[in-house]
Image (cartoon, rainbow, N blue to C red):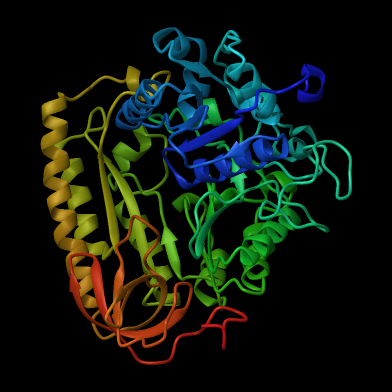
Length: 503
């Protein structure tokens, strides 16, 4: 039943969105916000909102606990509470039974989210969905997927796909700030300001890593059309965004379902050419799929950050095979060498799992050796934990949690030393820093090309007189504190388009 069919609506149709987890969830929340506003809801940051919608994370145990805590906190404030996102999708009716304080929604509810929240506000309680393997919603053959894609893929909606059209039809025109008034339409409403924004280029994953449950609840891999991405980039540029962070579950697979497995090579220059966008950063690269041509594009295209977020996960070939992943220390070392041959200053980060079932001291030594040789800018270390429904949870050789914690602490200590050394090695380099915060007294906080938002450290620039948030400042690195850098401006800032004479 649509809002119009339902009749008069409650007066207090206000909703607060809480986003947990990764940047992909951030894009999903901004799609939800646009859909809600288009159906007459007011999205607000106020604690007095009548409904709190929590876009949950269901990746690892700590993220699940954070999501549950956020839902309980929201319920304690007296508002109606709705659970959406990965935890809600993954556990459905089970989560609803254990958490009666919240209405649990599926990704399939996103297209009618306004109606669903109307029902919640009216006190209606609908049965939560039974979880299913969402990989089965799309054809096995990647090339058959685009024509079969539907609203069950969050973060992929466009005006056309949502039944919208400029000038009428379907949901009414989006409010100012949510999409252009004409031309290509973007079903997204920014929930946070600043000069950096994620751009989701694909959803889902076709890989079968033995420790990962994400493909089962996020679905099979599905790319977004390049024209939609360029249109969204243009819209984001109009919102003051200077850097786009391309996100997905596996960015190196972009285009394979469109018959063009090298489509990312073409997309990056197209996005870098969008007026107002100064930096494109790609995240979530699979080492097995990083081709020489892609390395050339990332290291050699103006406006594309020479930055490689490589999902190594380990360096022991034996452990990686048990994880159902590619590579070993030698192959990963060769990949890093090829990247640095193209750009010696390239930033490289990765995450690693320790304590995987059957991991031996010899495997750990191989990982230690790889990290000591690799010169990575950022290293994330995670302890293995069983995930429901995964192959790894059934493997022999499960390690004691206390031993896993010991291994995490040991590797994390090494990682801190190695990252600090890599930062020190950058002293004397000239970098372009995107300014994100004015610290006062001529000092500004930002990030160089090798520093992704929130995970890779920051750079404090001195001497950039007249800089403003969103400017790019050329600076020389003069010092470091762990992964964080200090720099001195060596050139006037590059201003936001149209900013000259307006300050």
